[in-house]
Length: 433
Image 1 (cartoon, rainbow, N blue to C red):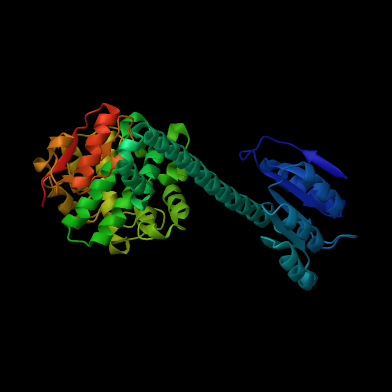
Image 2: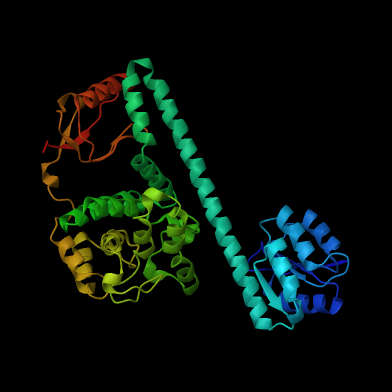
């Protein structure tokens, strides 16, 4: 026997199943959760519940422990084997502790709820369980999307290799090595993130990464810290991938309360997405904490002063400096001079004063020594020169990353690539050290 009630839900994918052999319990649960907007199914025994699960996509099931023929432990044991993604809750009495232990072992339940329940408590448990389920599903979706984008980019790389053919085998090997290297993968990952942003914000992540690394070294921090903050700069907005179009490029000062509630989650989501990648373990806490403020009023953890990782304090300054000029922090677009004045005004409140002072001591473009950069053709390159900008193909694909040291081998392969593509590169370099 089953009963179906449908209402308009703020979370349209929320479908729940109640299983209990007592009709009054099913009716009470139905009345309690109907106003929450969930799509509700009920069954008066375990077999009927399994039939519903076979034909409906259920997000969460609440089962009574004591039922004839198939008790709650047995029923939830079937659920975890066949539908492991369904969240499982158990209703039990105080005298059913031994049975509850059995249900925990067989059904791997999320929580058990004692009868009689408190209405507010059981509703909160259900909402928290569903939110945790959807957060996990969103993380999996974003990881799958990123994997697909990387596969597409990899296919583009293979197409490029076909163009240069056998005469450029040496360049293909070097290019393939660069693409497969961790640093190049992170830069491609960053580009995928920026596909979600409007044209005005394109290049934002790369600017943040470059300037944050330069600032870290300018402050005398180690090369490892500088590298961690560089990776964090490239990936600091990864948690925004799930944002709607209206939120992606909206100024922070203009967010509604509901939009702000979604916005403040992105550092946590970003850190969670990357936490399994060992080479990024130094960047993960920087990403999580880059919206913490010096006076303790930031998010997500309310960290204060030097409790905030130094890389996050650096990223906060550089990120806000760029956002101010894009109109993504305040409602107005600021000039570089206005943006620097904003940093000065809010140091000791929003920002570490030492980081602000170090940043403001650098040139306006945030890169010391940039005036030494030159633009050369491939034939003008000399061994020992250093790329001051990424070297890209006409289609925008990365050949060499900024900071690469020019060698005789690179000069030869770039010259051959120019001949194969009938394209002359404008190569930004700094003199050899």
